[in-house]
Image (cartoon, one colour):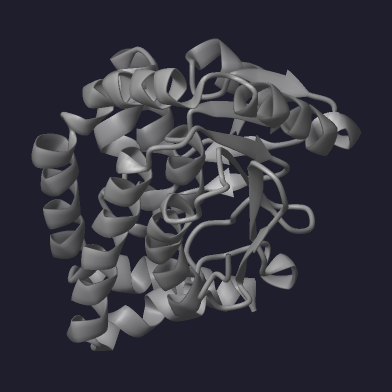
Length: 258
């Protein structure tokens, strides 16, 4: 099957397993406009692939995804139309991932930050490299963690623990991520692709209807957040996107990154 996606998100593989690779390695797979659009579109295209049974999601190079591309996010400061479209599309990414019928294995090969962390933890099984970490630094730049962190982390890990990491934006190392329930198990970095493929092959050999229907039932718990906390989170994020404090902090961060 041919996938209609930009080169920043690739789909490869034959037989029953598809590997989706976030492909901006020079930018640590930071999410720009093209990648954001592709992440919203890929799940329906995968669901339409008659031979696909299992999906592996990973990043090219040394990161899974460093979160939002600073140049792209900064452009929202003076472009409310693009800002609002990014919020609509962000909700689509989360909704499509939750409703996707096939099992998805996240092979978290490096930092998964912001939206990258949200996408990783919403996969069915999260294999995380011992060198990787999760983080959601929205608040540090004056934003509500609206693209999934505030809505979904408390469903996966104790609220007291998730509050600390959401409020501070501190890194969650691989071992702690497993302890908290934000990842399934750690894997040595060099073994991650092989471990993900072995697990994918094992899942692909199971009865598909039973596996996919079990996923649908389990995801009903997470889907309850779509109509409540997730929508509230995106609405609150839009408000903070328009604040003077966000503008100042984002511009300062962008200057330091140059």
